[in-house]
Image (cartoon, rainbow, N blue to C red):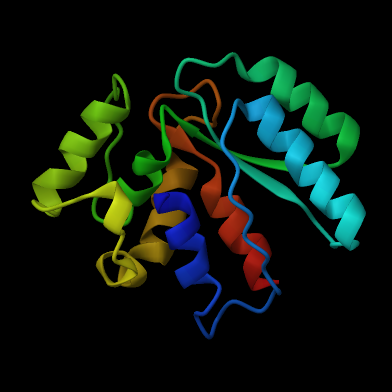
Length: 157
């Protein structure tokens, strides 16, 4: 999964000061929130985050569950590829779905394959992605939007 590969690589960067545990889970945003809460409770982590795509889900239930359980949410609308795209360019136009986001990524990375994420393609753009994401309408309503930059900022504290 490209999200896992991204965060596995990111946590090895010298400017990341937090200890990071990456857990792979599939499911709806509310299932991801519950899984993050369970891991936080079982492992006594300082923070737990769920990285969720809006895709075709309604974010309200996951947001309410996250607030109840103390889990932070990093939304991307419509998908995580929006976050990756922001490493390469500022894109503020509507992104219909994950396929469209992958097509946009392929304009910059013609051989993009989400199963083979090469962090070297994104490393130099992390700061730019954070700044570009902050200029977009906030998720989960904004499209495109992502709050993954907030998670990256938390990892630097």
